[in-house]
Image (tube, rainbow, N blue to C red; front, side, top):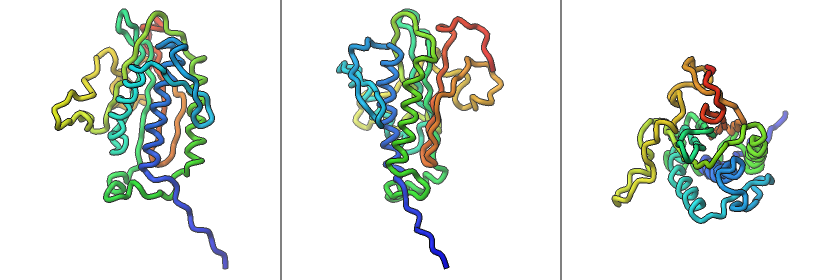
Amino acid sequence: MTTTAAQQPGLSYKEIADAIISFLEISLHTILYLRSVYPPSTFSRRRAHQVPVYQSRHPQVRSYITNVVSSLAPEIHSGKLRRMTIVIKGVEDGLPRERMIFDLGYLAELDKLREGRGSEVGLIDAPNAEELGLMLRGFLIKLNALDGQLLDNQGETTFAVIIETNDSLEPSSNNNEDGSVPPWIPALANDTLHPPSSQDLDNCTEKHEPLLNVKAVETGVIDIRLMVQECVAKTGIERLDP
């Protein structure tokens, strides 16, 4: 007669969500450095998951990023954030040069899991802390290598962060009962991804600027994928492939 060891639970939904939120903050800082949105001298080199990353030292930039991440965190914890897009665009013409697109997918039984304190209980088949760290490490390595795959952005650039929810409703962080100014406003038409995220970009027959699939991490609880779109305003290529 043989026995098998009981399967050990991995991280909880909350723990994985917190790790993804931190990862998005690290990625946002690093993208601004890699794509030269601000001078390299305004960033400090750090390490995350044993990979070199960068953090802005400018107080206003850091404050803005902190506020963005704080505002999108509730959407991830509730499983509603479908996409976060970092749009890098020209200062003079306001046209997008490239989009860094983070797509998220969630555990199918999330609503049931979130009842009571289920989101804080370790999940069978979920990665443990070491396994998740290795996944995110591979993602950051790919992110750092991305700079060499893209054309340089000419001229002065700025950026915007756009989020899209699964239910197409306003982010919950906009429902401020104290009457304060909501953190999210409707995105400019030029900044948004075409075709819209309600369509499957991989199988969409509508023409759009090509997408480069960079890296995907599948935890089985929260999955995340990064795609990059170089825009016509940068490439000068007017023919769009489906």
